[in-house]
Structure formats: structure tokens, C-alpha cells
Length: 300
Image (cartoon, rainbow, N blue to C red):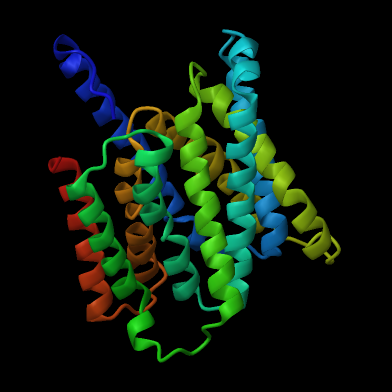
């Protein structure tokens, strides 16, 4: 990532620190999505669609309430990459949920978190970032930690399917594409980039929801409706504003390694709140990921 002129180093470093804080904050919110979903008595297809629509509406409302006006010139100038980013986001949601159905959650998660490795490999070519050997090493260490956390090594192959692996890896491709597309955006405020991409993500999820979930008989309880609204406003609207704000300030390789914060939070929530068991190997893997993510920020 370009560091700027010497006199500007302090300001650039502060901007990067804020970017890291925003990005990690978003990942922490994402890490609790599984817990919220487990409490919602509605088809996952419908939940994904509502999540995108509510999140988009929330960010649009915030943008309108800001009274600064929409920067239409910036939106028009960035439409191609906004479209790529939004469609990538929606397809990542769709493919990951499909992978959960086709294989174990552990295998689907592990495949989806191959995205950071993809970013480490392509960022120097597509974004002209200097390849950082320490960050590359930290990313591979984080992948090893993710293998330990997933439990795949002790699963004996139960529930592992080629279809599930393929869907999980496809989700990873679109997760990496989302980061790359956002690194191509230029001069567009966070709210505009968030609302447009969430709109495209919702559009991408709509056909899947129509064919998979909307035909089902829906009779959600009040708690489920409230949780869907929470998921849309906080875990989508607020979280993606933080996510896109962070991406605008940090390099793709940094985002790649920090991305492993999300599965660690997810594991911690599942064990402490949902009381799901985690082996000693899983705890060791979580520790490995945290150390790798921290080291990536300390090493150049």
C-alpha cells in the first residue's frame, strides 16, 4: 500500500489504524451472524434476501438523513466496480449458504476462508501492491489455524462432499472479488459505496430466494421478525459501512490476514454463548489465527 510522502506518514498511519479498527469491528459483527441466524425461525434463503434489503434501506436512510446530498458524480464514475462488488457480495452469501447445505459447516467455512490466500496471490498483480513476504507467511499460518478450528482433521471425512467443497471455494472467489472491486473504487464516500453495493447484493440474492425459499409457507414469530431486522440494520447496514470504510484505508494483503478474525469470533460465540463444544485443537487453532493476524500488522 502506498505510504505517502514522509511528512504525511503520521496521517497515513493514523488512517490505516482507523481502517483496521473499522474492518475488525465489521468482522466481529459478522462473527455473530451464525448465532443470530440460529434464533430465526425462517428459511435461510428468505433471511439472506431480507438482510440485504433491510441493510440497503437502512444505509439509504442514513445517507438521506445526512442532508449532504448524494454524490451522484462519484457513483456514476464508479458504477462498474460498484456493480462487481455488489454482485460478488450477493453471490458470496448465496454460495456460502448453499455450501452449508451440501457439506459440513466446518468444511464450508474452511473453503470460504481460502479467500485471503487468493488475495495474497493476486493483489500484487491486480492492485500493484508490493508483495509482503511476512504477510504472505502470516496468511498461510492463519489458514493452518483455520484448519485446526474447523475440526476437519478429526472429522474422518463425514459429510464432506465435492459439491460442498466446490460451492465453498466459489464463495471464496466472490469474497476475494469483493475486496478487489472495492480497492478499485476511487473518490466515493462510504455511505454511497455501501448502499449501492448492498442494492446489487440484494438483486443477486433475489433469484435464489425466489426459487428456493419464497414459495415456502411463512409464519414467523415476532422474535424472528425482530432478529431479521437486527440482522439487516446492525449486521448488514452498520457492519458493511464499517467494512467498506476499513477497506478504503488498508491494503488487500492486510485485509486478507485480518479476515481470519471473523471465524475466531464465530468460534468464541459458538462455544461461550451457544455452548457448542470445541476441542483443544480448535482452541489452539483460534490462538494461531489471532497471533497470525496480530503479527501481520507488526511485520512488514
